[in-house]
Length: 397
Image (cartoon, rainbow, N blue to C red; front, side, top):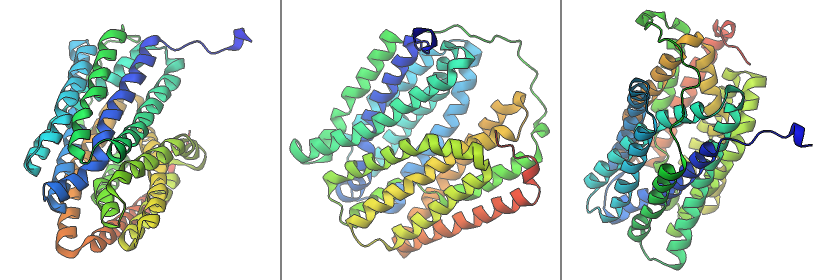
């Protein structure tokens, strides 16, 4: 039996998994409580929440592009990874000391700078640690540990709020502990790995070489992103619907648990059914969930809607990236993913701001219905592209 046992993964891969777990515990001790903290404690409105989260997500997307490029240039990934995790770990808990929503905006901006700095070099470092035949398993472990942290963090926050503290600020400050532990594991257990596939750098292709079909799909993704506001609004909706504050982290843990459980089956479905069909199914789930959030009437419905909404991520996260890879030559995939992340990240800022303004002026029902409608328009556009010629370039692996 030992002759067919899979080889053990590099210890550095396992250590990076624990780094991701601890960092997500710290992050998700804070995130599900943030909407209530902003609106109830700091008296910020939904427009301010949209601005904060839109800036945060757009910042992370752009920093991923810059940090990945820089780690290739300096040829040392670990120092950049350490810098990214350190910025987030030491800045994030300062939300517990914030006296205004503008200060939260600055802290969230710095936190997402840290996330953006570390993500691309960390993934490249992990790829350097293992041969190509083991990379799927290595990245699978990293994502599993990351999602496990996103479940453990809210559960820890809920326990602290229920049995130890009476307000969120103390929980925010304690989030420094798992963040510092993540840095300690990174420094002690993760080594700089040699590059496994050294090749002479290729000349940068002309700007017009990415296929037209790729840019068409990116445009449709951007249209959908305009419907896809920050999930912080869902947590605010849950609070307004009567979910107690200490249960909000439990709700977020449920959401992340369902999302994690559905991710691999969603990817398999994209391979078997096709990328576009799977994405369309996810976007329809999104629109249906947003209609539900528009008319939700109580806590029990909120719990069901969060579980249902998680399937949107399970169906789309892998399928969208697979479609991007399918649409371009292998030598252009780095540029293609860069354009994908930058375009969606840029659209995330006006999407969250517009959603917050609609919520403030017309109420949450109008905001959620507008999001559902925009998602359906994007789904129709993607279906028209696929059945109008895109089928020829979509390749289901």
